[in-house]
Length: 167
Image (cartoon, rainbow, N blue to C red):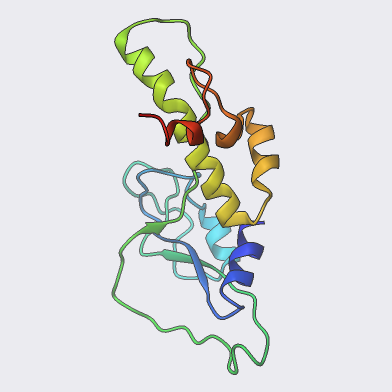
């Protein structure tokens, strides 16, 4: 859904970079580094099968992997993509972190502050997910188990929009 939504938003006129990574190391690692066998399947012919590097068993040397996502038509991209070798070895990784709210019973100052900010954080996360995927915000809120800000009452019973006009 994310890719579909963003392709539509960009009118099929862009290429998305998921990651560009030196296969000798990762920090943080989204997954285990590719094995020599997997690299061979990608066309890496120059790596020795018995290569070991930086503590990883059978780790690749001198391999930089880039993963792109693209969907295009002849009228949007009149020519096929052309790749160019570069000396740039800057790592990049697009990551999406899922955070589950803490549901503990502590009543310390930090727990109270956490609970006070949790609803705003969850609403921001729901809005961002809706923006990225095009999913219905109310369905996202339902799945997250949060209420709409317009109907969210706090201790005095007033909604956020009623508080705007309070003196």
